Length: 424
Ligand code: EPU
Image 1: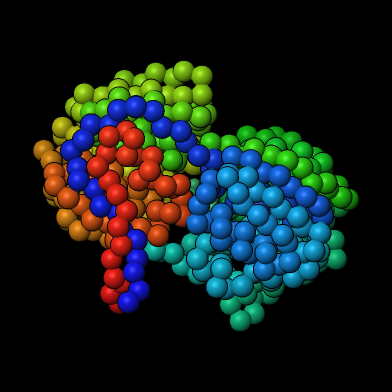
Image 2 (image 1 turned 90 degrees about the vertical axis):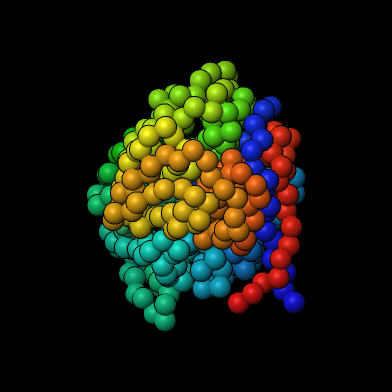
């Protein structure tokens, strides 16, 4: 019998205390891929102990690189990297594997990376990555489900992204830093994770200007050197804990964060009735559990993050009144809606808009995780639902939240991990 982890929550406890936020998943993954750009030893600190970090480690190892992850520190030695391929088995479990394509083609002139395919909430194309690399002079073919990219040496170019894609901006940066001449990426993503990747590459000797803006200028260099780096805090993990506190009428200090990265969320939390105090590297949230309805529309940074949409929906499910949540980044990112409805939420979905009618209370029930942020929303709902909620398939949550139950327990939540048989 195959057993799978599940999370069990008995809801209703008010959260109180402080919680330390881990390093950012979406910041560390492109940095790990970036280590392929120069031979040598890297020392990366504040690394979150997550399934996706392990998957990226396995991918780098499959290319011949030595990777050790211990107590939030990654040691990577790249001198034996000799296989320039990312196999389907790994890419299908983590789309961010595509980040190795940029460094492979930029440094070795060859990269073969499986196409990631769709994801739980619909198609997620990588055409911007491919078209951008072609502008830099890569010859790209799709063969047997793989992107096969070849180039002698990439040449700087002007690339206008059709949309400010995080992944495409990261991949093109990773490719362009070793190209000949200068590259301009316009309509680039401005997310903090892209700024942190740029900082890492500049520490390696790259010349990237315009960091944090929508126009990134890269002056290609011939070689780069290994460097050390500390991973920025995870703004989405932080936001999830802030919502947990508001939902439960709690008083929680969320520590080791960069509050500037949370500006849009903090503004919405204040509007919804929470009291927010920013102190150095922490945010204290206090709530009396009275939640006001606030509409949100997801947007690229510095707008409201799509990665917080599912969690916001739980908050709005218990608001005094109705609100509208519009998803502008991933139109189909609503797999959590039907599970939240099983817990008693009143949500009507129309294309990329959800109308959420606040209810008095949610009721615990067995539910199933469908993807990472949907799982986070179910945990939040379980924390406030009456009775017991069993959340199955929590391997999704382990991709992006480090021991979430261990962080919630000291705040007063009744939550534990259990196992159940896998029934196919
Ligand atoms: N898009 C294309 N073609 C492309 C690339 C993107 O059409 O080649 C579209 C997407 O379909 C989407 C939009 O552009 O509509 C933005 O997608 P983006 O490329 O920015 O997303 P991503 O790089 O695939 C990263 C995060 C996601 C996060 C999004 C948006 C990582 C590893 N993933 O994905 O994080 O939702 O940016 O902020 O950084 C998560 O952590 O749960 C997660 C899904």
